[in-house]
Length: 261
Image (cartoon, rainbow, N blue to C red; front, side, top):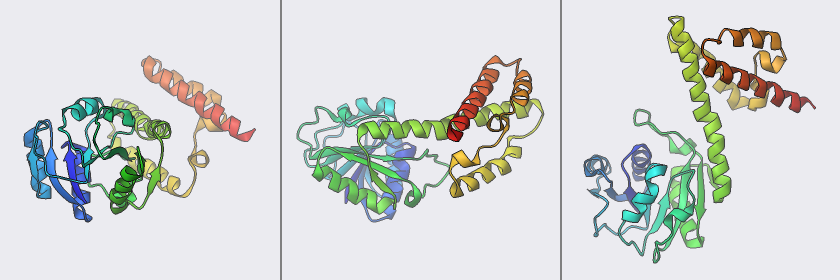
């Protein structure tokens, strides 16, 4: 499949490199920042441009991999591509973002459930991909692309995918915020954050073998509310952190009490 990449950030970079290495041909990279497009295009042996180009090479699919807040603006700047399936990668955006793109072969969504970093290589074979399309032709192109990238491919509609995105926020964004709060407390003790890493790595190993409902530990799940109150009192000088600790403890306690009933 000949593939256009629209964007040059983390997602665009990882998708372009992996697709190129696994049988697809990236023919062009376009970005709001042409110098960034040039850098990625060099890595995948493609041509490059800004978004205002009118003579992009023909491709079966154009993957728009930009941030959610930039997606609508970028889509509206693209030239007409009547023979190309337009695809975006945003988990929180529906296909309505392609409204008005009359004449396109179809459009769809390929959402990788992963947080990408330029410093960490991405193994798409293990990353779940979630697909949605406006018709069978678009879905065929999506499946052809997704099947070369990952062994875990699912179909979800927009509402289901947005709920999946919320699940990702809980699992990744919220847990990372808790790590940041822990780092603040460790800083007060003069300790590095990496003292927590063996415990966190053990948790990940547990989660590979058991459901998170089964791996929860701590005073709240045991119902030791005296200890919860004592630990909460230690945070009284930071009201936001104290409220977060209290809220999370109550949530854990109620959640596991409900499981027992």
